[in-house]
Length: 122
Length: 427
Image 1 (cartoon, chains in turn cyan, yellow):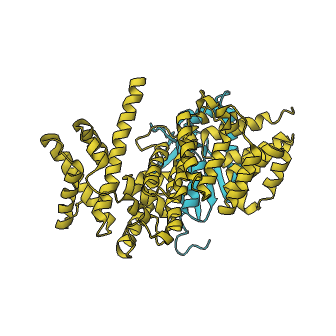
Image 2: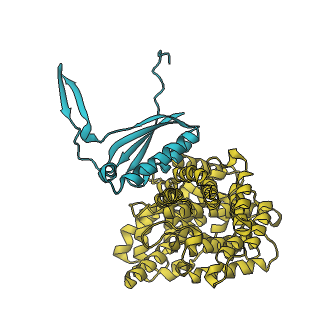
Image 3: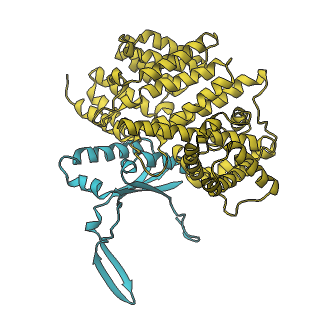
C-alpha cells in the first residue's frame, strides 16, 4: 500500500530552516529520516515545501480567476513537506510516521493513496 | 515543590486505588457471564450513578459494594446505555476524588470481594486470544485505560484498536474461555503469556519516556510503565511459588530505578554508560534486588529472572564497583537459550565489546542476519558506537545517521547526530 506521510510543522520548527543556530540539527534530523526510509526500501517519493508564506493560491469563481498570496490562515501547524512510502499496511506506515522528526513537535498525518478512478489505466 | 510532590503522590495513590477497584469490579461482574463489554457498560452506568448521588447523599460506607450492586441491577435489567462509552476513564478520575474526600479509600483498597483480577488477566492472555491484543485488553479491562490511550501506546489507529478489543471481548464471552488461574500443569506457559503482556505494557511506556511526549491531555505513556509495574506485585502476591513473576517485577523495578537518569539536567539523552549513578533510585534498586533474590532462592531460572540479573549487573556502579562484563556475556548466553530475541543478541554483542574489546563486539554484531537487524535501531546504534571506538569513523558516521533515522525519540536522535558529527575528528 502506498501512503503519504504529511509533515505538519509548527511555525517555530519551520523557522529553524532560517536560523543559523538550529538549521544544522534541523536538516540533520530530516536527512537521517529520509536516509532510513530509502535504506529500508520503502521510499517512493516526496518533497520538502517552502513555507506557506511563499504560496500563491488560485481559485476560479463565477468565471473569474482569483489569484492570492498565501494562504495566511492562522494555523498552529503548517505543511512543510511530504514523504511517499510503500509499505505492507497502515501499522507499518504509522511506525514510520512516528519516526518523522515533526511527530514530536508538530504532527504527522498518514493518508493512504487513492486508487486510480475506475476506467483509468495506470 | 515538596508539598506538590507529596500531593501528586497522594493523588496517584488514589487513582491507582480507583483503577484497582475498576479491575476488581469488572472481574466480579464478568465472573459468571464472561461478558466483559456488558460488565464494563454496567460499571460505567454505576459510576455515572455514583457521580450523581454521592456528592449529595455522601459516599457509601462500602463504595465497591454499592457500585457492584448498582451495576448488577443494570445487568439484570439488561439495560444498555444509549451512547456506548469507550471507557470509564473520566468517571474513574472523578470517583477517585470523591473517594479521597470520604476516607473510604482504605476500604476500597482491600475491598469486600474476593480479588478475581488474576483470573481475568489469564483470560486476557489466553492462547485463544490474538497475541497482539492481549496487552491492550488487559490494560483496558484490568486497569480501565481507554481505547484511545491504549491505541496510542501501541501506535495503532484508535478505531482499529477499538474494533480489535470488541472482537476479543466477544471471543472471551462466546468461546468458553475460562476466567481463572489454570491448573498446575498448564500454568507455566499460560503464566508466561500473562507476564509477557505485562512486560509489553511496561516497554511501551518505557520507550516513550525519552520520546518527549510531555503533558498533553492524554495520559502520558510514561505512566503506562507505572501501571504495568503495579500489575507485577498483583501476580507475585497471588502466585508466590512462581519465580518468573518475581523476576519480571525485579526487571521492571531495575529499569524504573534509572528512569530519571536517562536524561541530563539539560534534557539531553544519556546512554547507560554515561549516566550518573547518583541519579539512580537506590530504593527501587533495593526492592528489585530483594525480588530477584527471592526468585533465585526458588532455583528455577527463566527469561525474566535472567533479564533482571543482566540489569542488576549493569547497575554495579551504584555500589561503587565496575560491572562484570564477562558475567553479563554469560547471562546473555543463558538468556538466549530461553528467549532468542534480537534484543538479547544485540545486548550480548554490546557486553562482548565491553568484556573483550570493540572488535569482538563488532564481529558479533556483523554475524547477525541482515534481514533481522536491518530495521532494528539498537543494532545500528551499537554498530556505530563500536566502529567509532575502532577508529573507523567513515563507516561509523552513516551507521549513526541510520540509527538516528530509525528512532522516535527526539533526545536520542539529537544525541546520535551529535556523536556522528564528533566522529569526524580522529582522536
